[in-house]
Length: 306
Image (tube, rainbow, N blue to C red; front, side, top):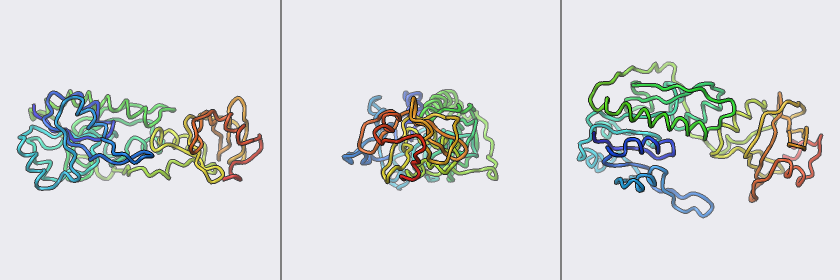
């Protein structure tokens, strides 16, 4: 079995490890600048490929004629794709005997696109899964080969859920790729009328607002933890939320309902406990210590200090 593996994000790493003995080339996104120093950083997949001693390439565009010819030269059985970050052209898909096989972190046709895991949490879904699919030239629109379903925990963050789904994806890759290479596998067309989209996350979406309902903002916190990081804006400065919890008191949106033992703040139709926060440019501290430093008192409204 000869495979080319396409992947970039952390979600793809367990699948790469699972099929590594059969991988002749790893294709990933180019190194990008990130962090305060804007230093170049390799993708999680590239780092693991190097660790495993696998050849790796990171073309800016994988659909150029030159790169397609390079893929064809490997004469591989299939392309295995997971969280790669580019739509593969028909020419790329046809470079392998069985085409492209994708591991996608949702129950297709729901949540096609770049961010299925946080979008499912944000929308209040109670179940998700991993879909193994035959790729076509569309975005996550190809035939379904297999689906593994799992409940979403009521307090589960996107990071925690991604870790579980990545493990599931790796197991599916191990089970199904030998069958796919042998040509013995089912294909069920998607119902495109039921399709929903999961577009890329932008940082502004991670802002929690007191005037929105508490349960929805708790889902927002979970959906954007750890990345890009949920936050509130107080006195025109972002305060990152590192740990919060549901609470029962009610009040006017933004009202401080308690400062000890935990800082509890009212949202629309409920409240949330701010257990650990990180003011801009500072270290994480408890919500209570932050409230003391800000001289917040019960009855104050953060909405008035926005």
